[in-house]
Image (cartoon, rainbow, N blue to C red; front, side, top):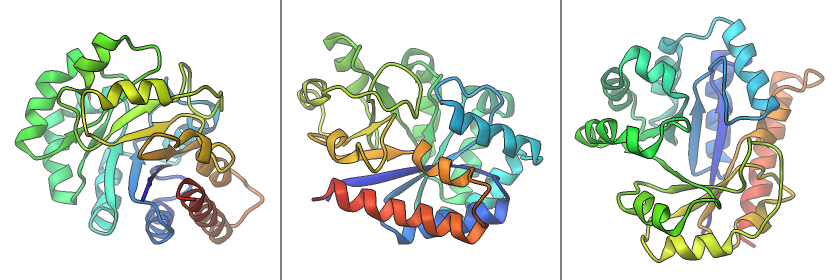
Length: 246
């Protein structure tokens, strides 16, 4: 069974909505939740997720809110925190590690923390039995792929193309997936530009997909009520999960 990872932005449009949406996604076939930490300059994300980040911050999001909603979510669905390095650095990685364990969160995805700079933090997180997800891109050399896969934890985040999320470019990933398989049995999940139209193609050769912008587009649709947004996102998750497994 191929896996579905779903990204949502914490605190938009409201904290209780985040909890309700997360639990609905878990009931709709999502295997792992990326609980996004709003940040003012999400450099790896496209305009859709960037807008949700900014709206959440304008609504007054604080890091303590992340911990509060995670305590309600993580015991019921496998959860990772996805965020940029600045908040982790500002608050302290050990604080995040302690809170993650307290909440039941399984690890972190930090896209702007390079592998080499992550090593001291990775050692710290291992003391708390937490995962730090590695990114691999199609532009990485065979030597770098060997390095990045050496101690990969939980799953490898394979970036579908060089760029930002939500753009939907298409290229064959099977050659790089084959290279990754030579070094590790860690599952490979494909992210960036994955939606209900591209998921079946993107998952070819991989173990799962990571979907964010497709869900957040619905979240930002002001024509929908909160209940309708949750229902539509849950239906989209079910559709994607079915497509990657047929």
